[in-house]
Image (spheres, rainbow, N blue to C red):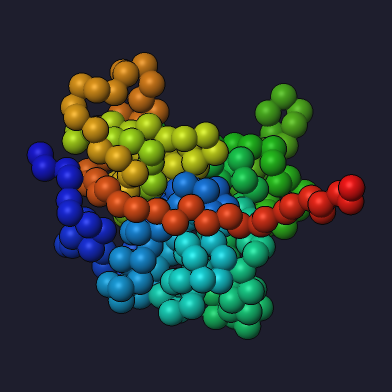
Length: 234
């Protein structure tokens, strides 16, 4: 099975359609599939639902799809740093399903494991629990959360071989792995594709069985919030 494609546009060919649910990896601006997001914007696909830790910033990440109004719904845990997101949500143009961060990660992991739902204490007694089934275990109340089963998963990794085995770097690993597993189709963009057999099997974070298409590209690696210390006077 051919998995390596020349670029993001080719990798999305025949996959991206209107109305899809897309699970996107990354944490803030770290480890986001920026090339694939740009190609999704260029595809013109509409009415998309994104399950992602956050929505990027105004001109980067999922934020570029908010600018073109290609996103109808976000399933997220953090929605700061994005003025257009705030504007669309407050005006009723964008639907938001707000999730605690651990719940969102577990919903993706559950979907990848074929688990349709699970109970958690997180969110009990808050707006998160409204309309959800409640159940008591050992005298404690839990709410039912559903696993996420996405039509497409897009992730960004550090290294891959041509079979799709992936290695992530540091913070980029956290949401990318569960996002990758919960998609019917997973497309990964990587910094480097290495020869088959050159990756240490014990170092692989995501087996290639989860990955259907791969691209290699150059990445901007933008810093979301830059904080510096004032220079001390001599």
